[in-house]
Length: 110
Image 1 (tube, rainbow, N blue to C red):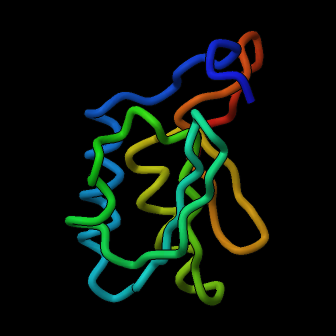
Image 2: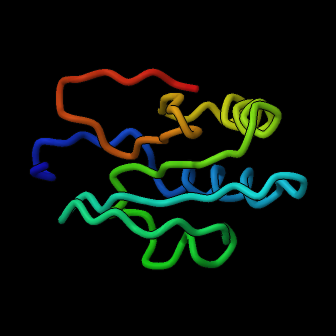
């Protein structure tokens, strides 16, 4: 999608909150992948939140998808996401947190 037609709904502070919240989940090993706003590239799944997630900063992230295994992990991760109140949605495999949405549209918050 054309980046100029997108509006931001996250900032660096919010991304660091998400990164910290997921990194602090010691009992749950969540996987994540991102989609690049500029070229639509979707990264490989990664499980390292502390170093890998912030490489290259956050400005090109259109969304991050978080993959969970099982209902108990889903509940734990959802609880964290609700605590930091991020723009996103529940997906079949976990959650998607948005950094940009199409201009003029709204987004729900977890």
